[in-house]
Image (tube, rainbow, N blue to C red; front, side, top):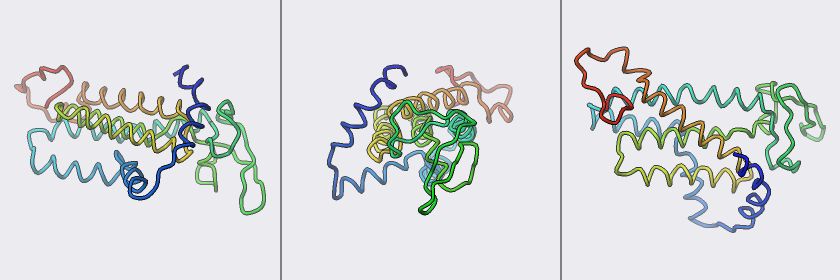
Length: 214
């Protein structure tokens, strides 16, 4: 994390210098939604219909993702870090009670990260990247279910983080923190069987991987 903080500005400048256009830009923009609602719903339908024996552990993972989102939102408010698009540099943190002038129309208005729903307040919610957290958590769940494609899930999660940097929505440390948080929560949900433990049969065999029921 410390290295990511130190590299925030150099990486931002390097990624900003990249020129991505045409179909590649549209493809990257589409894959940025990996780990968001629609991709989760589609994957869940596929697993539910084609792999019924994976349903219990899939529910564990879904519960982990459901818990991950509010955790990310709470951390965003507590950190109050400005997004790079505001031009203030990576060391500008408001904390939970600070304020920053945001433009509402042509008028600067003082906003704080706790003012959820207020116009523009999301610009004060850089840390952590919830898109990356959900992508990393989703990739962790998919890797648990389909381990032979772990490399693919990892690439897709990395693409999300890259797009958040390319769109100037996050610093590299925001993306790193989000990825670590997503993996941690997803692995915990799978290991502790957050959902399936409530309806598992007493004779269910232990998972040889030590994470939960497959």
